[in-house]
Length: 176
Image 1 (spheres, rainbow, N blue to C red):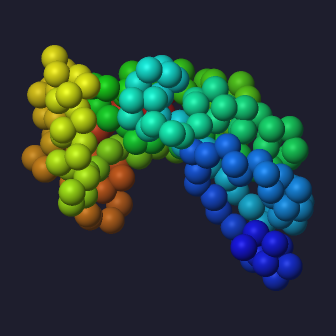
Image 2: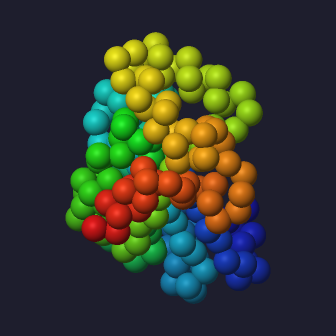
């Protein structure tokens, strides 16, 4: 697909948490030279225990930062997506993630607050109460507070950022 996009000069945006992206570094570099590419690397947590528990079988945070560094060194426009932010679980890491990514060459940063669509809500709730039993009620309530009393919000412009005091504090922390 990337080769086809390059051949036809089609712009590409990539969001990933996977380090396999680097296997196509040659094509990514060519797309970047033509100003046709933007890459965002998702980093959930710098705490490896939390990352591996939440996202098993994905690239480590260290590896994701190495991807950012490699892309930046090859002049591929790259940023970090702090996502998903789970209030009370990883929200305190926002500044550290952004700093680590910037130190590796990330030029931009974005974030999303977790939203739990459909069956994901029950899967996440089960994971949360098994892995963080002492904090589970607080975290669950914070997620609901960001989405008008629900854990999901489908409204465009709000669904990824949330609303309310907790969402506003996350926005302020991100802005700082």
